[in-house]
Image (cartoon, rainbow, N blue to C red; front, side):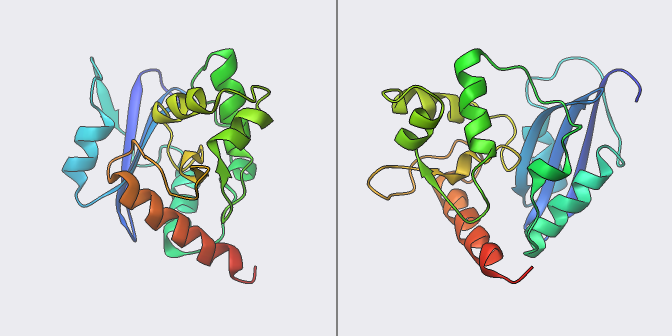
Length: 178
């Protein structure tokens, strides 16, 4: 792969999804939005310098994401082990690892994630890490909910409404025969 920032924006059943990468490192994803231009705006925000579109960027991942939004069960963690993710601090890395292990159709609370990450009193800090998740869908921060059973916040475009829609979608996917 050539050096430099590349992006791909592709159509799914829910709208246009975006990927941004630097060489083999995936830097950002943008959940489906209603137009290519809006997705591009969110995907490239803060990017200085040259970026170029590469429609084949992580093409197998694109196909899997399209299938996910069609309602097909896809385990993005198992399928794409070769993708390098951004570097996180030690605590954030542990939180991200826990989130990546939450199965499609399931949820954990912020407290449960904190405990599994080895920091049982850090539920609020877990929320802060997840609010900065630059790879929504691939890192399942939408699968983390409040202890009282409410959805909680979601920093990706669409907010809590998008989070609820994704969780409902995944419950349907998880109950389908594979």
